[in-house]
Image (cartoon, rainbow, N blue to C red):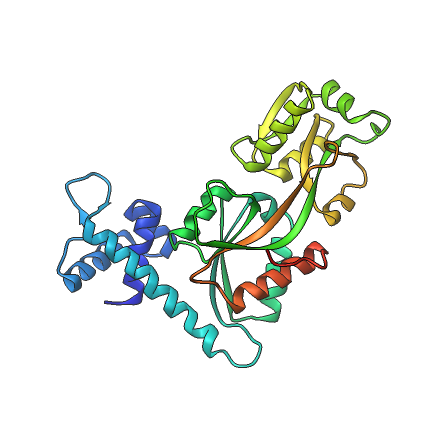
Length: 297
């Protein structure tokens, strides 16, 4: 039994097929099959039901995946425990919502890489609820999500990273209009309602009794801002103070009264925290977000 074979098994369970797992772990499909056969010989049990067209874990396979995740988590944590001085070495698997990927996270990761060249961070994108479930399943060590997260598996703890206000943004020169006029008189570029942000905006619009003319519904905040900058409509998006400063050329008005806010947090499992890795990531993100005096929840 090898650690690489265990990583292969976990990848198949995560991605749902031998082909997608092969891409994820950078192996050929034949190598993936060899790893599976080797594990089955070691465990003396079939891990997959081969009567199905797609790989389906047997009961023994599910138990093996669960134990494999525990073994890999322990192994990946050894480097952090044995690291000398303040340098971090090892791997951290994190998930992140799209707004973090397009905002503070890239700069924070670049700063971490410069300070800790042997610290490897793997990043996966997703929506808050999905990422919370993946942490609970052991597929991720931590995730940058919004708060609250629904559904919210028990046993997760959060550390606040930064806070964002919701803003109505429009093309330049519309600052004389009030919020309702801006939303009702121009095409509305809606944030995807599958995401918590999109549902929050939609709920607030109904509370305000504002009817908008939706021309687009997008899941990328970066794309929404670009559409607005090109004069294609108005939108509501969450922005940190630093991001707001970067939109100085656009019309920006607070959304709702009082202005709606959201907190962005780092989620971890309470029984398996990422320790020094998480602390370093939190510090780097807070530094880039420009938020101070943020306390742990």
